[in-house]
Image 1 (cartoon, rainbow, N blue to C red):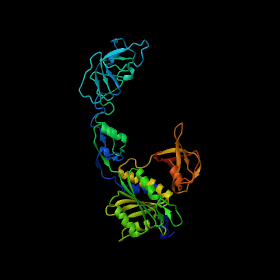
Image 2: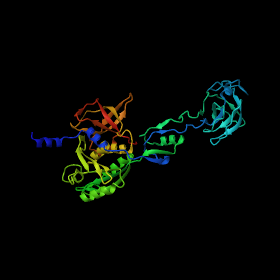
Image 3: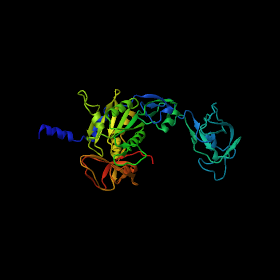
Image 4: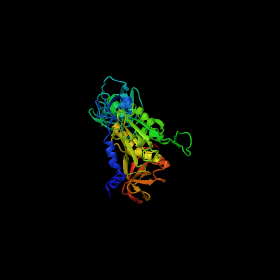
Length: 437
């Protein structure tokens, strides 16, 4: 074989997906951190570990509405009529009678002390009197105001929460890379945190390219294709946690495309294009962004990846700010799969999220399927938990190119480059899609 033939063969070889992803993600860095008010932190990712400055609960408090008492008064000799066994109703209907010496609400702040034979009426969240070690639920009493009769005796410590029993001061609340959820916001606020340092949500701009594209609201016809991609990819970017913007359709005009991308670098942390990544006469994105100028390579490198569907992917930077750009195929199924394997990890990396890839499980395949050799296939599937543990996965009809299959899927079945047939009953990898249903 000649040197020219060797070079042509090398050019025709497909790059393994794992190798390609590694080379792309190594070029990305998480966005610079911001100090945000806690009310603005939701949806972002922590840039540093967060430690509780104060304990939670901050003080001993009642956990239920009832009467704060000394447990020894409830199980002692029975002042005013005997006592009931702990945690049960007395079969002889004997009760404990205590004097109610005050009321405590959540806003009470003066310290008070219990004396033998006395109790305080307390609301949930109220600070406990000194020496109180049990709260009797109000429904276990006659709800007396000056004196109360207690029909059932709880265990010592029932109905109260001690200072710091859930989160002592100094507890590590969350590590860097943790997604700020509503529940985490509550934990941070409860321990006295008003500001956190986070990675901002990446600003992602989505551009669809192609002279044939028309906007939604009409049907496709010969020479015209409805732009489904930019709408779908904008939604996918938002689902991944980005601030996503759709700028619409760009014709296959070299100057128009360059100008549009240059303008978008002013408001984008990542640009996603769809369409024009192949080598055909109409694939303008690849021709423009990979073109050599002044002896230098173009800003975007296009690679034929061992991926099914959608082998041709592009990655690079554009503009003076060198904003990252991901170029996805124009076929809708291939664009959505390309987003999952390339754009979504890029968004997570920019956001500082860990891990950057979707979670996966091993599942038992319910039917025999075939796959193209030499390509890593991502196929829409439905994954379910088995009663005895583990998972099963059912491939959806139509294969990876069907939009209806992608819309129904709650997972993506992954078949490796060396797999040409996967038999029913075999174990396969499945990416879990966090669709809200």
